Length: 265
Image (cartoon, rainbow, N blue to C red; front, side, top):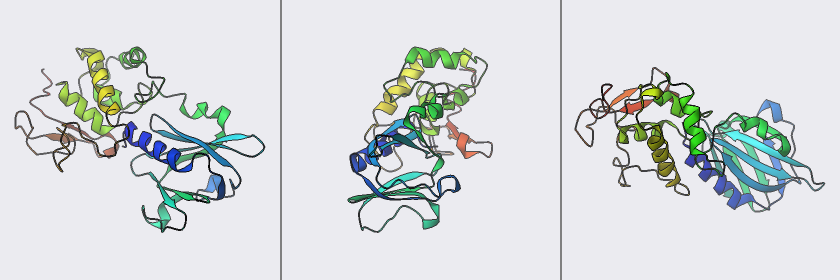
């Protein structure tokens, strides 16, 4: 599950490459938009809202539209100078191609693709909680959203984008480790929910504009994280083997230290 900063960085890269340019050819490889032609439309801006990517467009007559996509686990947008060979995955995984005179944007493994009037784009993201990376960030609202279901496991609640938008499996696992919180502790039993939310925001904000993620401060391979992706390896604090739980669903994978994050702590 990509983190909010990954989507933010994709949106920024698309904006830097496409903003102000006119589309000369579009190719939608999804049934719902197979006949859509955006030739002549101009890219106004690219923005992220939580884990949703919003590419805003305008046509010569002044009409506006928003192209929505979601990366989920495997999606990505790549940009290439016109004429350069594309590389980002097998051709059959391409879902969108947008060509300008200078740059071609190619969307691989994209999900939830939709094209709506920009005035209606809110219908695609209104369900989201405050965005950890956005101008709508509101810590009090995020805490209130989490607290509304006090019996819910904190790990599950943090992943629910309706509570706060932007946290994925990595930040969830790392924040809970650093706060010493057992992932299945009920939200209502978390001693300092405000401190946990504050730490999550500081961590994700630190990675705006950076593609390489690290919560430990080290960029050396294998040293970037405390618990994430380190199942059966020793905890960096107490040497207890890190555990992993996913219940067969990698969308909800959790890594934790059973000593530093004991259910009795």
